[in-house]
Image 1 (cartoon, one colour):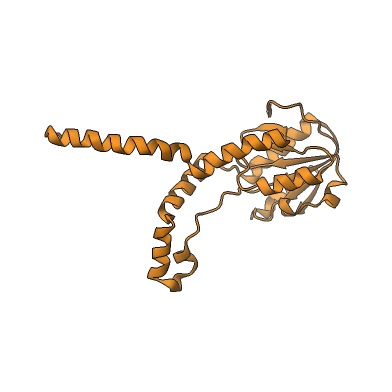
Image 2: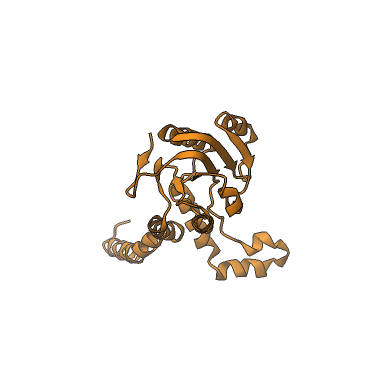
Length: 215
């Protein structure tokens, strides 16, 4: 069952376009891995740009995001269809999904195309009464640019459904709230700030134990 979030109840009716998005979290960029012929210079560049820290942050971000499968997103689409009065459903499935076998299962709900959700134009949207973004994670990481385009091009504010089964209108207020949560998720600022206190404190207690002869 989907959980409706705070803003006004979304109107799901008529011809509905579903934008099925893959997980948008990007791996930390490594110059040494991208251009191995640079040798030690590439490794030095990675150190200077804190590659290990960026990789650590990215791994923690991905673990917390826990992106769901395309099959799970199919279930979300079915739940959305059960909420509204839908005449026709069309699904644009992100080409980043490699499991083509799932397309036939989406086809049982309506038309299916392999399309980058970020490439949807105003001309595409004018054929639909409702546009619904389906994320595989809780925050739709990496999709802020796509959302801005949708808000400019759609006749009515689009709707989003996330991997935690939350559904709400994707208006400006929702995007501001998402932007803050995305910043925390992609920077791990909370954890980094806490480490400024935890690490010195741990060193202090370790020194205390050493002075007392404790191992």
